[in-house]
Image (cartoon, rainbow, N blue to C red; front, side, top):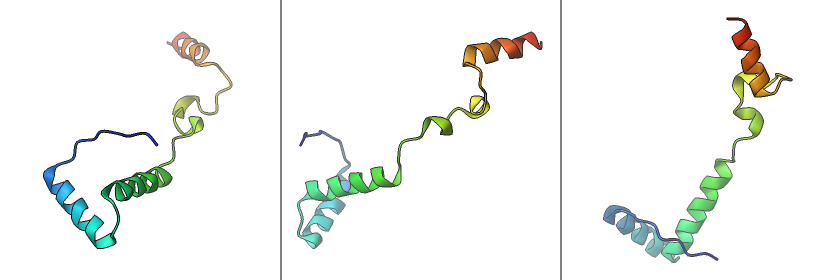
Length: 72
């Protein structure tokens, strides 16, 4: 495992410590589980999710740009 240095507010640390005590778990385990859950619920965007106007275009983007400018 890789160690990671993060900054958390004193209030967050206090709440995290309380939760760790209740769960009888180390603070680091709670943080790892939280990060894993967040990543699971926020998968990376697929390429087709981000290209909007060019999504269904057979043209390469520069060719598409030139085609649009020719219309001006």
